[in-house]
Length: 260
Length: 244
Image (cartoon, rainbow over all chains, first blue to last red; front, side):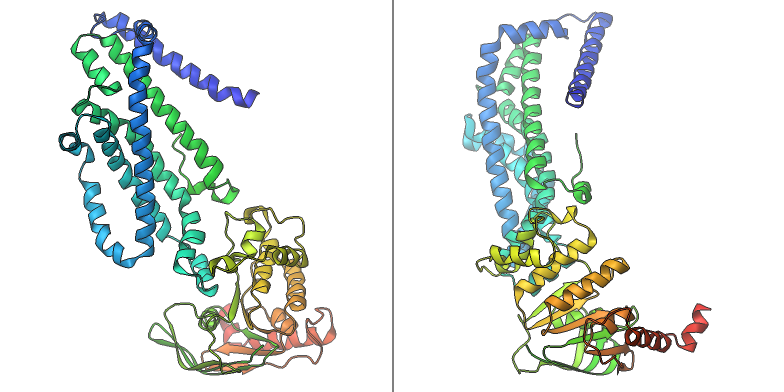
């Protein structure tokens, strides 16, 4: 019980501290509530607009998860393909590096122009933002099979596909987890940017609209909901990474950087 | 079972490592290649196993039955080469899985039990000791049923007592197979070999071995005498000058 409670307790303390600081700034600066609302006002707005926030949060969350799933699936498939085929490596790798250098966020306006104001353009922005870190992290992991295991594959006369799926892929799972962490951190940005560029729904749209109308407390409330979404996503991933991929081994724990 | 013949010069990245090798390793017997670090022992192991590297043989490597070696050599290395994410049964059957064959998990369990790991089948390698990991590697080597087995310093990382126990176990389970043991441990070579050679830059020198059956008792007078003779042979005056 004690062990379970301490992180929660610490989290609550940090949260309380942050809220106190926020309220302190509001008092000391004497800023009007339409410039900087205090936590109390935001909480009231959160409660009063719960239905509205929930509706927009649903739209954002669905796009976020769809884009994330599509980007991860595409990234994993690309990395597996690259690892299996030297020809594909030769062709695709420079493209990947170039694509990673170009800021995908900057493509959001053109994607909206092409795909419209609906869900598709947001999903595609998220997908693109997720795709590159997942592909490059997983691919790097796949290509770094330790020499003893590469020898094993050779001695056992492994087929290239079996070598990939039975040796390279499991070995690359911690690397994939690192890529996913990066993806999960950037995906919420991407979905909001997509909504800012052009949308009539979603938390990003709600923030812009509330800001324009001077409803700063509602804007902050939307931001809180968005942050909560990101946190839930990140926590879910951590759980998955810990339970599924590397079924923790004392000697191997260091392979996975701890972002928490 | 098949004999193995290795003749010629061994080259490593443009430099000659060993000249005039003439090794005839008989079928169904244990042959040991003994030598100091850096002489090219492990290179010979990689050569026989068909593993890539900067080495090159100017000469011939052939099986006694005239068939190609590729795919007929199992290898056990100092590093057990286990999959850290897989349990022991999965580790032992990895060869079949990699070849798209049906893994024989019953046989894997039987072999794990034969190497003394019954009850630990569900463990991961990280939860094993060094000696236990080599036992898993031994079971994985056995399940392959290869005509040739190359062991590259298989027990070097183990403590002396564990090493002696592993030598006995390997000798029992791999009896009557063509086994090539690469080692730097004189006692290991004397305990396990039917034939043994000392490797040097100028070729391989055949060693005298006791007439007793392998694995030779490490307490037996003949074993100890052979070990002493071999240590004397290894401890040359010019080496003594270096070590003081």
